Amino acid sequence: MTPPAPRLSALVVARNEEARLPACLASLGFADEVVVVLDRSTDRSAEIARASGARLLDGVWELEGDRRNAGIAACTGDWVLEVDADERVPPELAAEIRRVIAASADAFHRVRIDNYVGGRLILHGWGGSFGTTLKPILFRQGAKRWRGQRVHPGLDWTGTEGERITAHGIRHELDRDISDMLKRLDRYSSAKAADLLAQGDIGTLPGNLRRFASRTIKCFVGRKGYKEGGWGLLIALCAGLFPLLSHLKARLEPERHRPGPPA
Image 1: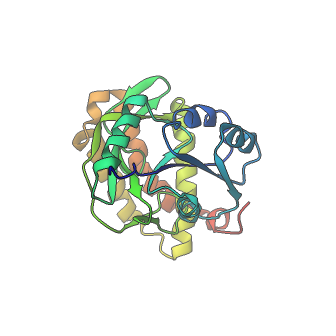
Image 2: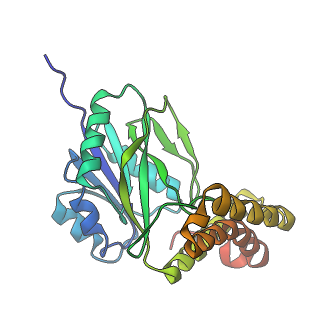
């Protein structure tokens, strides 16, 4: 007898994403179940999730890692595909994901990410915790665990990495425009400042100045951001500024960024 196909859960973790959630959920119809985790959402996100047929987990989590782990635990599939509300899975990629999990003997797979700013696809220059073109978002249940941090939490894995899925990519509506990109930098650096203060080590100014220089150069030169012209330079500068701004916020305004109870 032919063994049954593995069950696939699609997981979406969001907060106040009523504008982008419908398109994301519509692209996940190929999954056997969709689980939506909402953290302190006050808009119509819960209503949209329920109307789509998704299972809803609504709550309050201070740390991004805890929030995502709660979502993974709520999934019942053999495999989990973890996407964000600003991401869309095209049909070609959906078919490729199904093919991979039907044959895979590994624990997780990285998937290509196509990042858009407005309507512009930007292929080169991403990195430095400010964007990526490949993410480990397809994994067996039990293989992936997020660490307890507010922004870009680390990962712990059980099992081996399999083939990378790169023939087709997730469409990631990352930023609407330059102003949106700079607002994201501000949000990320504030959350990272809280993480630095919580761990009791904010680093040093000279060390973070070196990181600014090395990350900017790596993104613009090593990751070929120069191919994107001014956009590549902007992305490289944001990637370099992320740790420096995080350090300066923790150092100069600790009272504003010191962790407190969830809002």
